[in-house]
Structure formats: C-alpha cells, structure tokens
Length: 347
Image (cartoon, rainbow, N blue to C red; front, top):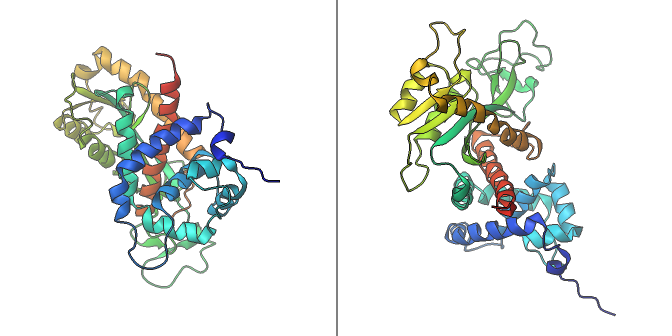
C-alpha cells in the first residue's frame, strides 16, 4: 500500500503563511541575480539562499530559539517543509551546516535588499508625509564578566567589579567588542548592549527604515537623521514631511538638522532641559503637532513584536554587522505579517 501526501493539500487555503509566501516568492524572484553571485562555482553544493531565507523567516515568525530546534521542526512539520520548499522525503540540514551557510550567504546587503522589496509592496498602505522615529535597547550576547580592560591585566575573573570604574574608553568585552556598556536612564542598570532604531509611517505603523548601531548617547539622533535622509518613494510628497519623536530628541542640533532635510520635527518638548526646549510655539500651535504626538505610540507595537516574537530583547548574534542584519531582516518579517493583515481587511 502506498500513500501519496502533498504538502500543498495539507496547508489550509486561508493560512496566513500562504499570503506571506506569495509575497516572499515575488521578492526572492527579483533577487535571483543577487543570489546567483552567492553560489560557488566549485566545491560541494551549498544550501540555496532562498531556502535559508524562508527558514529564517519561520524562525522569526514562530519564535524558535535555536537553529537546532528549527531543524527538528523542519524534519517533521509539514507546514514548515511546504513554506521552505522541501519535499516530504528530502533530508533536512545539520544545524551547523545551516548556521555556517546562513552566516556566509545572508549578509547585510541581502537583508537590506529583501527589506526594500517588501517595503515596495507595502507602499500603497504607507504614508508619504508623516513618520515616527525611536530607538530601543538590545541586550548583547555578552556577560559583564567579559568586560575587561583594553590594556593591562584583566580584573580577576570579572565576577566582582564593585567599586571599579569601568568605561567604554578603557574597557571592552572580550567576547563581543562591538557591544558597549550603556543604560537608558540615570537610575537604570548599565548593560552591554546595542541600539535598534526604527522609522515608521503613521498611517498603519509599517516600518520604513530599520538599523542597529553601537550604544552611545548620540546614536539615536544620528540614526534618525540617517534614516530621514534616505528617499522614501519615487514620487515627491504632497505635503511637507513630519517626524514625531520623544523628548530625548529635543536638542537644537537635531531640530536644525531635521529641518535642513526638509522634515518638520514634531518632537515632544523637554521643558526640564537646561536652556529650554528646542521646539517653540511656532511648531506646537499647529494641529499637526498634536496629531503627530497622538500617533507616536504606534511605534511601540513594532518594538514589542521585534523584542518578544523575533527574540531581539537579547540578541544571540555577536558583532554589529550581524546585529544590524537581524534587525533589518526581522523588520521585514514584521512588515510581511502586518501587510497580510492589511490586505485581508475589508476596504
């Protein structure tokens, strides 16, 4: 007796992954020339980049904590096999093979290219004029014990550092040198961390730009100016662009630089700041300022999804290029999930 099982028949017609796979396949088809350059002409055949990227999307969507568990799921989960493109009798990869191929093939350029193609498909649901920017702390995969002096002997085993003056100028992590000791508030705990930055549009909360940087006091404002300086769409906006932000962005340099980019800064006033707020009544008196402040919390669901579902609260990759790759890639996954919801909603 023989039984023929087709994964296509076992996946429900209304499953969200069906709509996501259609969008992903369109983006991957456009990236085929980029993938052709990644293949080696000699040696053993590698894992196809298209399958690597689809498997990585599953790991983000379903909060799979490790590559070993992902390979275990691919071995017996028909839904996962169908999404990645594996046949029912096709063997899965060893976790180490998958990890090494992922690190070699899925680079920052691939993540940015994939993110842009997903953002292009979301343009009908995006605003061209009104945005919100913010940053969040991403805890690095490095312990406090690894934070040792750059020059000179180590401070013991690193466990007892009470009473020691440890700064990024004199100390660095031995396991992740790009991670910096940082805290978001004066009363918060200093941790080895990176900063993740998002620029969203205010209509549906879709991510327009994403990036990761090292953690320092100016990184959020510098990243915001870099993201705002990139062109959004090919057509010029009908109105002057605005950007909402919290009071951490209320500095005279940021407000002046943002206006020089042709963007009106709708920044929350920091009235306790020495010298007063950089935003005056010429901006706050307009109705659009209040609208931007009302829409500004829409960026929090994006951060919440990335840090909870996509496991970015404490990232398991080391080095700024790898962290930036995962932040951009996870942002594309967020847009995919959000885009499926928007397209399924009634007009």
